[in-house]
Picture 1 (cartoon, rainbow, N blue to C red):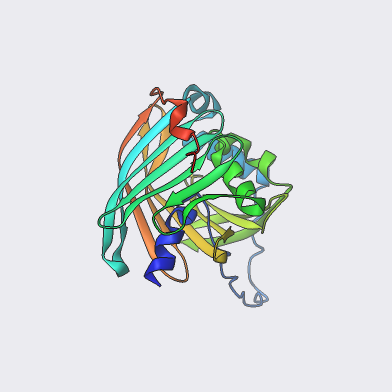
Picture 2 (cartoon, rainbow, N blue to C red):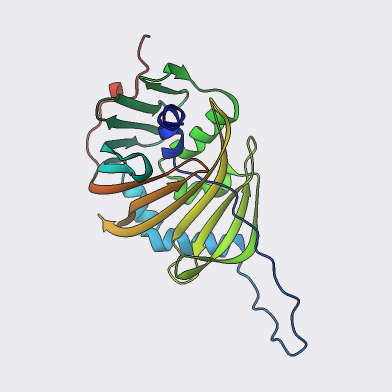
Length: 255
């Protein structure tokens, strides 16, 4: 179990999640008030972009370097993590597990690969590559509709102490995903997906919390990722924007 968990760490780090359980609803009473009309997909996404900081502020950022720590409490595992992102679509993540080694997850704008002590170097293909391409878009917040062939508002659900509008998003390749946008703030607070991996399809729930303003753009500083096997929490300690990142950071090793 621990070996499989280690091999999945970076597949779980990509920004994205498990199908949420559908809640059963009781039949409305005769005197029940009619449900308020739901906002459209465009209205929810527009509010999200504004909540993040607005399109102009988002586009002013061309690179991001994030430092933090991860914890898998059930396994007693902790360590440092770094994430590098560069517009328009390059990303790299490096996670260090003490006494185990370094785990890398990289997208160079065209190809995606992972490298770790458990499975060595592996290039991604098919739906797994398609998901990493979506996640690798530096301006994904303002380009969501371009990454999904169909987006439908499914209703409202509780997420934590608040309520969120639920959008079901179907990509051209891969399983449908669900995104939860807080009714009050407009921010993305949860994302569910079924992601491909070496072990097959993995259901993942990702929770976004502790949004903080960094150079006019709100960035979540706590991410909790839940799978049927374990949960992992990533806490950000530092975010730097518009920092020079050498393209070599995204190069695939020769072997």
